[in-house]
Length: 312
Image (tube, rainbow, N blue to C red):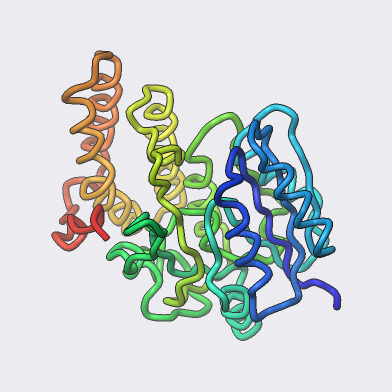
């Protein structure tokens, strides 16, 4: 059975979580897939978990970086080896829902669009097990209701869905596109380029991914108190808005500003208020000044419902 989809699955030191990610691929109702597992210089047993998967299931291929190069480099390594019509991404500590590939492929077959973006939920440790929460308000606004063959001007709220692993693309999308390397939050600018450069894209309310928020605090998104991570984070936020502004989609710029004000800035400001390094609040102040200077800022009306976004 010839695969239709290549899933690129990078991970570093995720031996405790990778089996669930692998199982979520094997449990897909759509069977025509191939997965490239990329061990990004792990120091734990991640490499062995990946090797065992490939030994027992020939749909898996394993690649390894001897030294960690980050998610962006891992995804680029996988992209250079894709030989299927469609490609998607799954972080090795997350999980696909059982019908994710089927929903993505069925949608693109119907629409002929460049890519499809689906909903996703957070998965948190509750009573000793990781349990998925509800679809958050900003995710719902970007993916519900189902829309086929739209552009960002027609659906500017799509710009809120910025993660790489919520989407399935035709491989042609990646002819001129790759992820930034040696930074974190590498998918935000790429996502906005996907939206602005697509002839058309789809959004669907189906939940495709359970995004694991690790209880030990080791997820990349949980490292925002580090100055280097903050700088990458702010660069990604700014770069994504720059892409939208350059494409002439002010409504999408407003969408991003509203979400940044409601979701991104409040926890960063709490960290800054107690941070021992004055460079941290200074970097945040500079970013806020830039944000307020944007022409779209004056017309932003934050949605009170987004204040709930940091909860389940």
